[in-house]
Amino acid sequence: MKKVLTKKVAIVALIAALGSFFIYGVVSDGTKYSPVGYNLKMDFAGEEVPTFMADVQERLDKEMITNMNYHTNTTLVIKRANKVFPIIEPILKKYGVPDDFKYLAVIESSLVNAVSPAGARGVWQFMPATAKEKGMEVSDEVDERYHLEKSTEAACKYLLVAKEKFGSWTLAAASYNGGMNGISKKMEEQQVADYYDLLLTEETSRYVFRILALKEIMSKSEKYGFNIPNEALYYNIPTKKIVIDSSITDLAKFAKTQGVNYKILKIHNPWLRDKKLTITTGKKYEIEIPTSGYNKQ
Image (tube, rainbow, N blue to C red; front, top):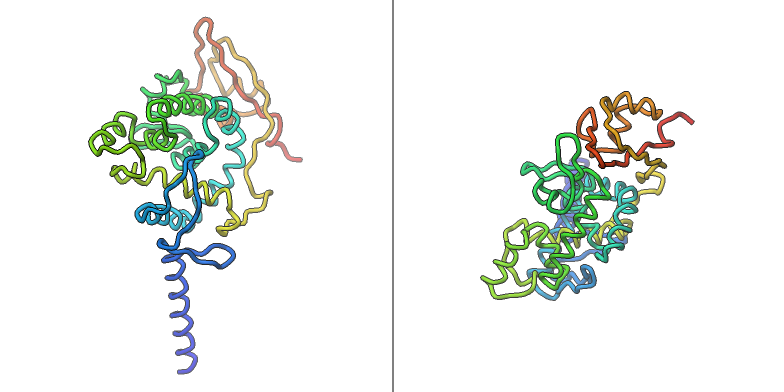
């Protein structure tokens, strides 16, 4: 009987501990936070987050707790960021877009070439029409939404236009989800000029808070219990770029001539969407070929 009681006490204690974790959230040093006492000083792209507002505290807290406890996905995005961020960061800098926008890519796709039910594709989740509008090629053979550098440049172009329109990086980020016209309409209807004052659809209402949560957790991963050693992170392997100005009728055969196979060619050039590449007069493409990473050492 004593052993049974001891076991029950242990179970009750465990449930209480887990309840405490989900209600408050616990960081690696053992400290707790609650929505009311949540006092993180945060900003997005240099714009202050008004955490003094009650609803802002709760909305941010929700996304923090969700992503702290979504261990599989949060672990994977931290590992992938080591591979993807070094490509995204210099492009953001080149266009004058704040570095924080790399976390927008995280919440859009978890840093993989995702496909949405609506038809958005790639790390930055462009729809076909928007992709073409921003200068990307979208066809049966080539879909540059899957080209990380080109899609990042397209995202920058969109965000710069949105920033010019709204005068705020936070509203520019929200418009990436809600659309510029959609955000403008809500601002006009509600007679406010700040994202945090707007009543929006659930998805757009959560959007910036999801970015903020991932920024906080990923930039301070050990604090939030994600202790991932450097050797466990994903990384980019060396590649060479080959300029192609004539059609390739069989990409599998072409891959063999480059010392790789079809699978590896497609891994490093996911924008190639067919088994061939037809090139019109004056058109050129750069194909990446890995120079290491696939042979036994």
